[in-house]
Image (tube, rainbow, N blue to C red; front, side, top):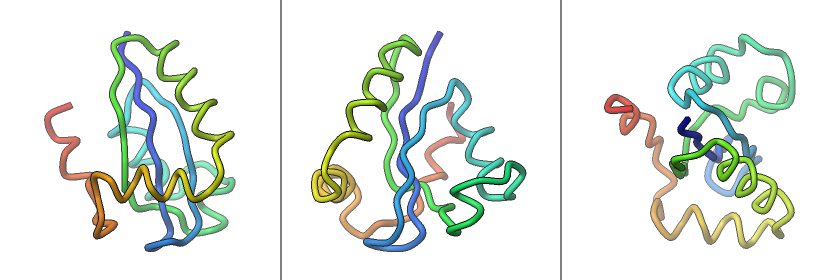
Length: 96
């Protein structure tokens, strides 16, 4: 079963949230509509700025745990390598 690791941001260089899910479009909807109380709703972290797809959910979980341990600058570098303008890339989810 596929899995996704994703990073949400409140704004460019703002608060970051790293997560993992089987259903990225559905999980993003939950974050954006603040359906689940918690970190992302408290800090307004709703913009999808980076994601990575894996064939196995277990591989996605391993990658998420690794990224969460990284220094903040490494996460910023990861985002800016593919999304230097910090655009909302949720439109890429239509094909998932």
